[in-house]
Length: 313
Image (cartoon, rainbow, N blue to C red; front, top):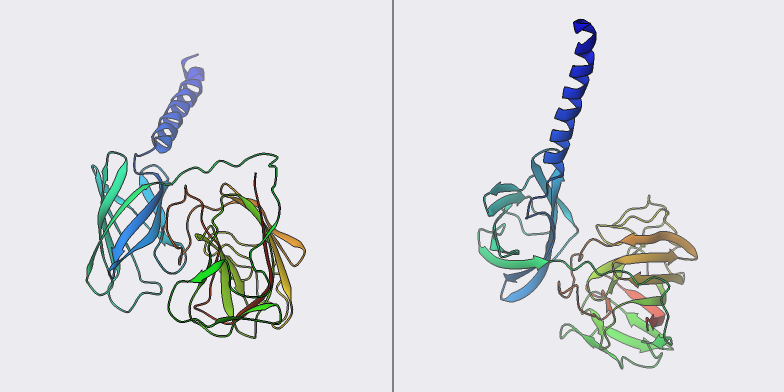
């Protein structure tokens, strides 16, 4: 009788230990979540983004987006009370040392410093990223032609180099230079664009000025979040539908809250997926506010013959 009861007791003990471990693993640290950051970098306020999450029982890991480049993994976020630190290797930054972050959680906000690759100290602060709830069964307004086919009315540049022009109803960026930004700002919308690019070129469209949908000469490559129709560094299309350079191509993009659907050249390649946070090159990290469209002009040549947005009512 006694020997027959041992397996039962051992089973109960095993279940209790498992539940205890799961409870510990599921307990959320106050630092966990997504954070919109602002950094004082090279005389300007630049946007950044940080995500912290559990890995196993006690390790915190994450992802980080700087003012340039894609989301990069953080192997471990080391916590000491309300303070934390982590390191990441450079991506597109100048040669030098790893970037070292020191931060502190104060009243559910973050603040800290970053040691840049050249050894300079950058201060930063952050707040929790908003949830941006999606509207079910939205009602849409009237389409707005942001490009009028005649000139650059309704747009402005982010630098003094003006390489954009309009010829025969086509908006042209001849070479790398200034980015083009719409004067109007939007929250939720449907976007229809028709574009083409020369061989080897690279551009992109920033939704709300914060989330880049990649435009690049990537035909024949496996789909990737940094290639054609990907949300840069975050969302990978399920198929690479890029055409040959020089051919007209189309994007139909719907963004509601954080949920995005991208139809590239007639095929749905990203369907109702969540964009976690801003991508490198964003105008700002104020995710709770409306934002403009930004057409990337600082990389390569690109042309548009249609840029039409239908805002949500």
